[in-house]
Image 1 (spheres, helix red, strand yellow):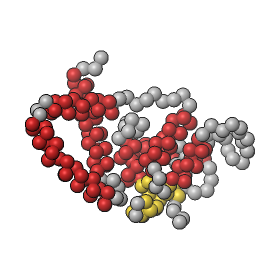
Image 2: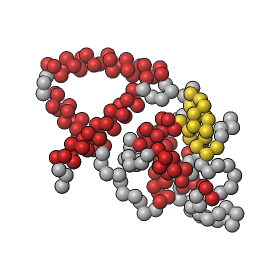
Image 3: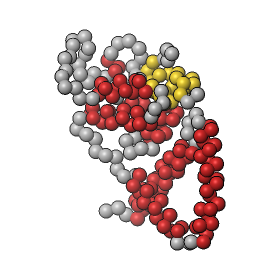
Image 4: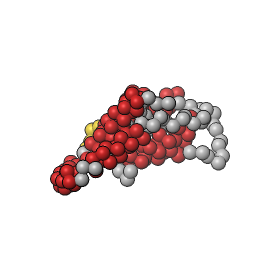
Amino acid sequence: MATLHDTARRIERGSVILARRIGQALTPEGRPVLATLRIGAVCLFAPPLYLALEQSPLLVPIALGIWCRHAWTVTQPVPPVPPDPTALRRRLVEAVLELIGDRPGIHLAELYPQLLASPWAARLDETQLRDRLQRAGLIITRSMRVDGVEGRSGIRRADAEAALRALSPSPATNPSPTDGDAGQDVSESGGERPGERAETT
């Protein structure tokens, strides 16, 4: 049973995660115009919200309770690791694709904070996360352009989609002696540096 101290620590950690997510939502990487619009909207709605809280003091504990509940929820233990490691890697790739959206890719500077704030990577550091991404078959391009920002390392959507296809169940497999064993780490293959390549376009 969780003690009062454990509960307070979880709410504290959850509040940090929620604050980080709000900050990332207000100031998306490489989108200064969108960030300006969102911050402006917050400034526009802040005074009416303050007046509402001032006129209805009961809203303060209600809002605080909602915040604490979300902070508690966001620090729920990491879901148990599936017995099949391929399934976990596939979920990680799906999470990356969700963050990419309809863009051509995502820079690591934007990807890392969002993944590290999620339940899937809450206990990892950036080095461990990078290793997980590469083991999932995701290629890190050394220099790529996303949202008008270029020259940063990232993951292309096309590469993430290819990694997802490779991890998806196949109705029939036909291994070739020259292809290596199924599930072989990228580091065991020849060619370019494992999990990383230079942008060629």
